[in-house]
Length: 443
Image (cartoon, rainbow, N blue to C red; front, side):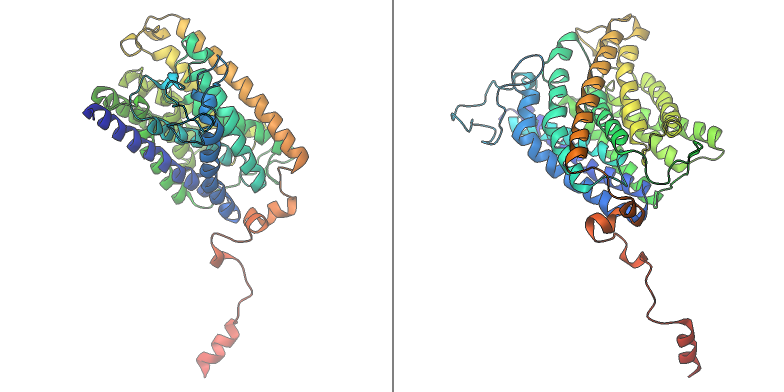
């Protein structure tokens, strides 16, 4: 076998495993940022969402996204149920059905697994924004729909040779394709659900609801930061030494810069350096650099990160002002900085790394690429938000999407799962009293 194919396959699979490991990071961040009474529910959602994603993408999503078709969606190889090599219907080889991925020479199943872990990430983003009040099985159903239908249709536009790709839209690792899709779907869900009980007062003031474990949130952030070194460099889908080295550095630089700027701006606005804002600042920088990481210089990535850190703090505060209740800041991180990062391609891209494409506005390319990026953002936002809103509405009218007020007050761990993450913390009537202890000591 060709040594290059072996090296490329190992690279793709190892980076895909890093992206898979990001599921743990999301679970930790979301759980740590929410209250203890909902921790089992959040952990369970983050655990099962990848199972939903795997089946939905295997059965339908992969073919819709990468199958040969028209500018809107894939039509060939829709059912992957028969395996990678043979069609379940005719026994004919799938070879040629996924022309959009012919640019990488790794085996078909390696391509599938790498794209699967990205699809799962988009679904996981929704979990945090709708946390602490959504019904468990309503979230499960939505996870199947976003990965089986919404995500892959847009994916065909962007990465599957569809109409946006034909216009020259660039999104290297998914600021729009992964993060904005998750963000727009989450926004529709948050609006459909409404805010958590007690979050906002009638006079418009906000009641802070702090998470129960910032240490867990910080651990999750480190796991996600590590996973991003699979997310971005892995999207080369080839062990290209120069490209993956530069992408690692642009990714890391943006994260570091955003963390610092988020810390500074949160201190200026809130009076103290807020650790939650610092964590979300790091994640915001990673989201913002995801689309342009392969197309920009290290200096540009530093600037992108600095701005992303400011954007996330202002967005967290801004969403609260308009009574959009997002317990973990997922909308500020993934939606706002997904949009910002996609625009950054049109601003900072350099022609030496975008062969055949225009450079960004700041490097002599004019408005051409920026306008394409902007049109892609609008198209994806409208499609994902409105389709998601329809799905949430149908779920609301049928099985319901929100738990009762009593269950929300008591916690979803007991109401939805009948168990708690920290059973020893549950208040119980003690089996002894201090008087009886004193009597025993006296004896």
